[in-house]
Every structure is written in C-alpha cells, then in structure tokens.
Image (cartoon, rainbow, N blue to C red; front, side, top):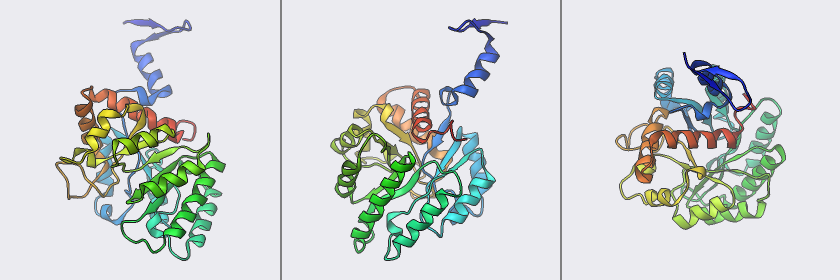
Length: 289
C-alpha cells in the first residue's frame, strides 16, 4: 500500500487521499459536470423525468441549476428540488418573456420566496426582444430591479438575452460593481461581445449551439479561456448535435464539453474540471449545500 505525505505533514493512503479530495474539492475530481441552466421541471419531462435524471447522473452530470420562469413555473421547480435535493439547486427570478403589465406582482413573489427558502442565483432575468417588444420598458425595469436584488443578497445572476445584447449590456455596465456577478446564459454572440462580457467579470454559458455547424460560436470558444466558461443545456431546448431538433436533456452536457475540448484541442477532463470549478465558485455551491 502506497502512502503520500501532504505538505502539512499528514499521511494519506491513496484511497484516503482520493476520498479527501472528493470531499473537499469535488470539482477537481475527474469527469464531473454541472448543468448550470436546465428547465427540467417543465412538462416535456413529465413522462420520464426520473429516468432522464438517472441518465444524466450516469453520464457524470451530478448537479443541475434550475432557473425559474415566473409564478406559474415555481411550484414544479421547487417540487423537483425537493425530490432531488442533492442534485437540483433552485434559482428564483422573473423571465423577461413573462414580464407583462402585472410584473410588479411577479417581482413581489420573487422577494417573498427569497425570504422563505434558499436559492443559488437570481434567474433567469434579462431582456427578450425576439418574441415581443411591447413590454420593453417593463422588461428593463424588472431586469434592473432584479440586478439590484442580487447585489443586495450577494447572489449571482443568470442573464437571458435574445436579440437584446446592447440593451442588456448597457444595464449591466450601469449596475456593475464588485458585488454583481453572473453568467450570460446561452451565449451565442461575437468574439467582441464575449470580450466585453468577460472584461466585466461575467461568465459565458455555453450550450448545444456550439455543436451546430457554422454557428460561429466555435470561433468564440477558440478565443476565450476556459476560466470564463460554464456548461449548460437549457433543456428541453437547443439540443446539441446529433440530437438537434429533439428534446434536450442534461445527459447531453458531455457532448457540449467534447466539442469545446475538440475546438480548443485540450483533454475533455480539463474542460470538465475547469468548467465545474467555475460553476462551484460562481454559485458558491459548497458553502450553501
């Protein structure tokens, strides 16, 4: 039996050292992934949710960050977190496509929930100009309110932006300080936009789009360090190749990681280790479990 002496004089067997590492630094253990953005509580998974969860865990995806949409989605989200407490971590927020004339009532729900249980982020929040521009002003107000709330509570934010990079980035830059941190979810912008985001200290959420041929995101990945990246699925949406057009699920996270490893010409284990560490640090997971 081999023994290893650590730098502070303790003696470990190889098994003890591995167990110690898994306990203290789980994100450093090989081939563990985190899906940092997945709507696993939606009805698309009602028929086989448990099987889907088990597939993801078997694939090495052991932690799932669940972003909220609005008041209607919250019960199913919290129920999933209660059913899988060691794996599912809830966010709370008002999605921009759910911002209507009654958005202040929805924000009141967010504030109330934060007083009732533990959440790991404010999200998903932001601005969406793809579906409807009618409530742009209300979206901007709701976004700013939730950014301020995140800063007050020292929580990260998960930012939704669709056809709205400049509007989102302007507000982020105005609200930016040392307490504001988070991820630009489902990033699919340019190299220049990626640099603007990372220079403010925010991370890029990379999902299945990176596997699409001619998506342009592969060039962004080449120019961006792993320390700026998180892995996500946005399940059940945006499944990676070869499942494009079908229901997405968290077990596909390794496909996204494999594409990043291929584009950057680095080992898959390096992508797994660094992106998982990024997620643990951003969402402060170890200190909140």
